[in-house]
Amino acid sequence: MNILITGGAGFIGSHLADALLAAGHRVTAVDDLSCGREANIDHLGGHPQFQFLKLDVCDEPALSEVFANGSFATVFHMVANSDIQAGANQLDLDLNRTFLTTFAVLRAMKQFGVRQLVFASTSAVYGELAGPLREDAGPLFPISFYGAAKLASEAFVSAWVGNFGIQAWIARFPNVVGERTTHGVVFDFINRLTADPKRLTILGDGKQCKPYLYVKDLVEGMFFIWERSKEPLNYFNLGVGSDTTVRRIAEIVVEEMCLRDVEFSFTGGDRGWVGDVPRFQYDLGKVHKLGWQARRTSDEAIRLAVQAELARRGAQK
Image (cartoon, rainbow, N blue to C red; front, side, top):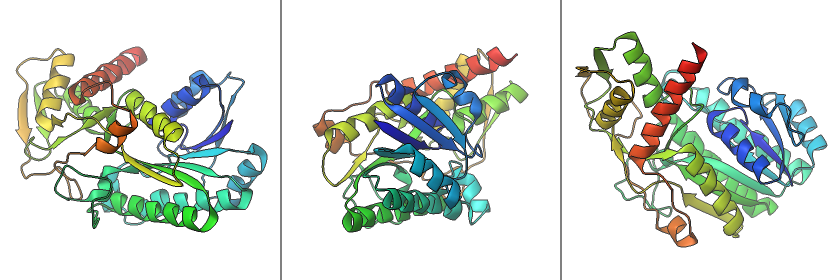
């Protein structure tokens, strides 16, 4: 079928494009390249079933032209501000990049009769609820602007299902790591240790503990719920049953960089920044009952991500 990926040159969106093409679909990827990189999709440039268009999905005429020409059956909506810390400093960032992009896509779907939406949401919608976090937990009070914009987007997706009869799948991601990432704890630690191989500054106390999901496992999970769950509105936590502390991530990075006698320096406090949720645990019973589980543990996902980023940097030298 014809599928549109918004944010298709991004970290997760580019892996999604790979998987959709491998499954035989025709893929149009749009991205304004504010977070995504053309390098992520360079290998798809000659693929007969793939096209890339640089545009901002909030540009209504440009997005309408894409929909008018695409005859899309499904939209995978991945566009968002992916830098949660930046959203605390630029107060309209998540309004514009996370919520209004969702509204723009929903409006275009209604105008052009597209009936299926797979929406990338986040664990940040839960705020600091005590876990394990179930999909029906509530009330939900996010503590980051990113989480707030994603929760508002979920509400609009639900309203679109109720008012206009579309079918939607909401996938709530944990921390996702792997090839093609452009920021995050693994990326930051490698940068800092490249600059100073003897000392690593770690935000917080290092005890922050979260599940980290390998990007290819995430894409498999998205496919699985899209193909297997058939309600009008489908919503799932996608994650892994294990977790990793920030200190352990630092240790893995040091191991993979073959460094010795690195001093860890902690900034203190129980979280890395305002809006950070220092620890959470998903209840994965719903998606496990459907039949999906991640292949890699949280620690394995971190190690794969570190190896991939080091290999990328090595190839650039």
